[in-house]
Length: 190
Image (cartoon, rainbow, N blue to C red):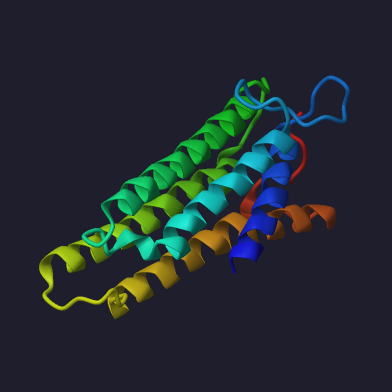
């Protein structure tokens, strides 16, 4: 699953930048003021996923903070670094969109990348829930509560379905000259 997230996020980042508009040369996708190229943003997106994977998989969401305080601090720094990278990417994409004068009806388009904000929220809820259990439940051995599993599955499923699935449908429908959800065609915003 981690590998799939890395691969799709890299291509998704490129696609979102491409749809934000093109530079004057008509080939190069626009970026905002933070990243020099969509490739740099995609590379940072890959780094963001890897940092979060270290926290999720490498430290098991740092639930056992009493056992290794240094690991907990490092994991918190990695998680915050991952969050900062995501914020920088979102701000840069949004800036690239804002640099396009005269864009109409970009709400649907923006929703495909602004929904990414939900991923660290779900991750944080999971981390805090397990930390709470570790701090308050005698004999807690790190198992993930069933309701937390359900919450994560439903939340990540919705986020993936919207940011990847519906986005893919929107861009695919454009190839057949069909409008999804009465939205404008998915084409470069230039």
